[in-house]
Amino acid sequence: MLLTGSFPRLLDDKLRFAIPKPLRDAIGHPDECVLYLAPGTDGSLALYPEDSFMRMASRLEQGSSDGRDVAAFSRLFYAQVQRIELDKQGRLRLPIELAELAGLRKEIMLLGVRDHLEIWNREAWETYLGRTQPHYDDLASRVLAGGGAPATPIIRTASGASPVEGDANVRPGQPR
Image 1 (cartoon, rainbow, N blue to C red):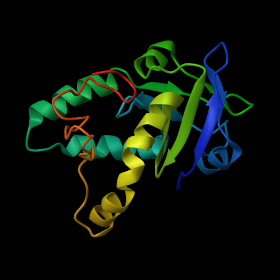
Image 2 (image 1 turned 180 degrees about the vertical axis):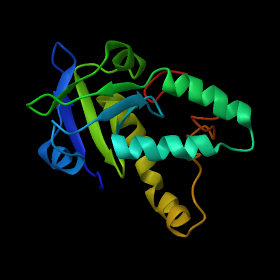
Image 3 (image 1 turned 90 degrees about the vertical axis):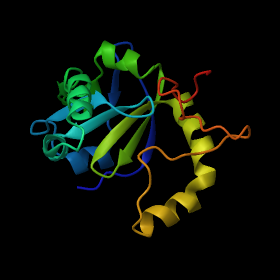
Image 4 (image 1 turned 30 degrees about the vertical axis):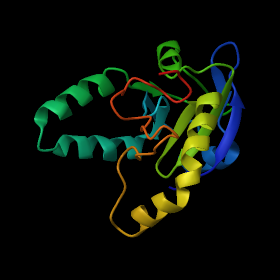
């Protein structure tokens, strides 16, 4: 399964939105599809089909050299993950606490990101895209050359500061 594309969506009053048909086809029939909604990175939410979620959980289980980081992340992550099901119309309802965590309002962006979907506040996505897109060639050369890229790219602003250095609580589109 390969999930790709960017899809503007509108949340209704019940915090529901429709998954576009190309993505529904990729993740499976609503009657058989189990999804997990979790806090994402950069102020987004991550929506994992069950098989992708289990692979990610397996990677977490393998841990790292710092067990404290794994334990802290696991607590924060799994305590907020919720199992989500699509309705017959291919819609899903966001739990209010996760919608608030990501600052989701009426306009959202749904992104296909290889094995999962990301749900962004549309303004935050546009800010992130505006800040990151100019560095696409540099990111591509580092990632495709096999050297990999940092989990969060270091992108310098006009002042020379990185928007992610020293302030992990700042989300895209939020003032420092």
